[in-house]
Image (cartoon, rainbow, N blue to C red; front, side, top):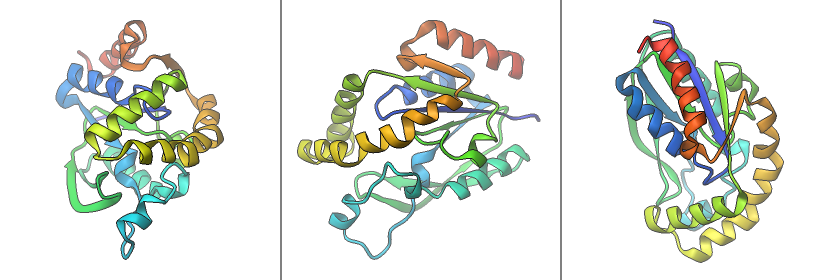
Length: 204
């Protein structure tokens, strides 16, 4: 089984997950999804307050080497045990989830194009490009409603780490994209083009 690896990158709140979900819904069991966020490094011995002050938008926050190894394993036809990250406590949990090899593997994350070994494993690199005002509003709603954060903490994190790291690492990585998609999963034309390319690969 030949595996196609698709990378979906873009800034926080850009619409990466919406695009990923629509592709997963369209192709079902032919698609596996790996989120770079699940590979955040684990921080033992730190309090919640200490963990909440860490910079989670810098490349060093991730165990990307493990993701690269896991992706190589999937491409070789073997399953992996993917780590699980708990956003409510700012730490990786003790749980893992089995991910089985499929015809298509989607890797999603803000910094997946920043790392060359990871980037080189991708057959198609998609960058979701969305206006910064839209992205911050989406992030506020998501973090407050889904991740139990306070409004003040979300705004503080955005100004101190998210925005500077986006400008330093995420935006420059756009140059590595094969396809730039404005508005993510809501861009019907781009979505149809991506679906068509995957259909050629999976034969559906």
